[in-house]
Image 1: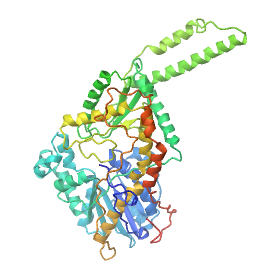
Image 2: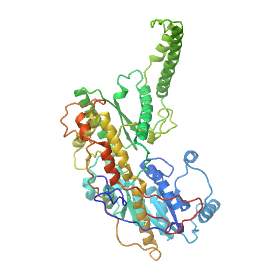
Image 3: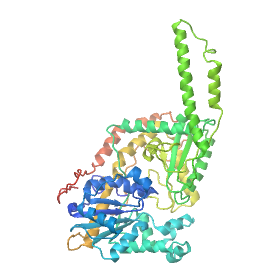
Image 4: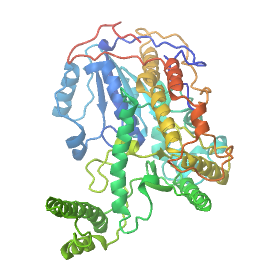
Length: 569
């Protein structure tokens, strides 16, 4: 169900052509307002953060993000500076002197303001009520009532037309917030959402069909050679292995080289995010691996923030013990090496029974006898004393991410394997996910590398430099509606974001349902017939021919305005 990925990838069969007319950004101001600007709560933070660079490259100093002020976030995520734009500087000075009063100091520039989610909707509603000359966009990433209904284990998507909206919102004591959300939707010049399934939901829950679907993208970092990102995977996997050694200290009875690392991450919404179906599928996967006597071990991380008072002392101690073991091993190794070296210099073959003395054995025994358990109920951070890795590093070190969300499944997780959670029962969905996981465990190391390489090649299709054009379309549309005498837009819609069938490559192993193998393959076993029928270079060349390079926006120098027409798409 991958959507029509890019409006410029016209070389891909099945994608319609669509060109976005250029906007005179030198005469415009663009504001994005959201509760998750520099405030990590969920996926919206990542959407805004990753999109910011592409947007800033296009708009230069005329692009602004507005979010809540939290001192701890200011210290780590924001650099203080004076506004370069004179109009904005005067507005900020006025607000500092007289409180948060809205003053029209745009100096003839037209203003676009995009508000994300109901928390930011107050500004949109007041802007329209006070008839301010602002072109407004409201974006919902998930409806407020939809989250609550799905959390109640209701067959939500198949009963959208049957809910009494006001009654449901009132019973859940969110009617006031729901009214703000719905008012924001209907006050906005343009209403957007992030996926087709959420567009259907919004039409029923908020009583307005979205004007534009703005799918979420990624900041894709490309490497000059394939081995570069493979090396990164190996490096970050080694860090995760160190963490696991500390977590299972005293009980590490499995081979880390035959261990697969899986993860799920997001808000702690047990059913909405699919943690329930994931746990059940893991139980069934465990049964299959044991039944087939597989030597593969699966370690799964649940990265879901939950309320905690502090780090468990035993948790920190487990990682400290792991480090102590490492230091002890190196100390004994150096001492062993010196004794061996001295003996060889004397022309002697040392007695291995005597090369370690009683003190060495005592040191090692002190380091061994202890067991600890580790939990990690918070978002990943390079400053964490438990698992000091950023999310991007952690993802690269793992083998597979699993996001079987029931609610808004396309928020930020384009999928390789798709679990049907709408038209299947929960039990059938569990079986389907189990088959996907079991099939992945059966893959050889080479098959996983092939799959990873192809995913890396095709990642351009999800880059913001492609998908950002849907946002460009929404901005142009809101200007044409707010200032019809200044901006004109042909009454045509962007192409529908329905997916298309991309040829299944020979590198993809058969699905578990179609596989005739009765047991998982060892990770170091190669399938000769697979190698014979697959040529990675040929497939890579086909991918390169099918993917047109994304457009690039030259950097806007500090304080310089671009002239209309300088942006070529």
